[in-house]
Image 1 (cartoon, rainbow, N blue to C red):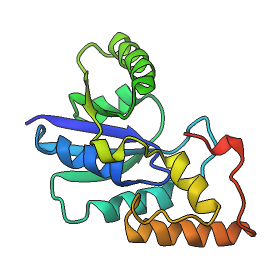
Image 2 (image 1 turned 180 degrees about the horizontal axis):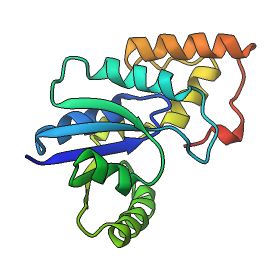
Image 3 (image 1 turned 90 degrees about the vertical axis):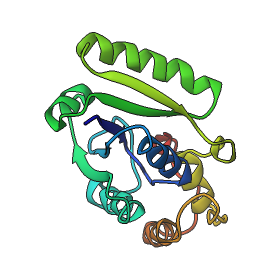
Length: 172
């Protein structure tokens, strides 16, 4: 049985993430959506909120589980019994970052492979920071995220006060 780990902050999860995870289930027996709890960036949603949104996305897919984690991804991968890290590539600029990350992970854990899936064409522009910025400016994100994520974004933004552009620290 081959288990894969799809790590990310998922702040928030969007259709690009969902597409990659569902396609990964065609390649692997189990996909663990690993929601990183302490990234070096500011987030809109807390770890529990993000895990809840991710769980909702995959509640009908028995091949996908959701959990939070902290620390090194390769350490969590080993502890979860996963042999593969799944990543998505949207545009060419993603390749350099993902390539360097895969090489660093390979240096730390030669027994764990990284597999990059090319994002479906209709999702190439999507990033969590794009979704957050559009939503914070009152734009329509219904084609980018599931309805429950759109509602969570609206609620979170209302809680922040006046519609505004998110600070630069909210970038992916």
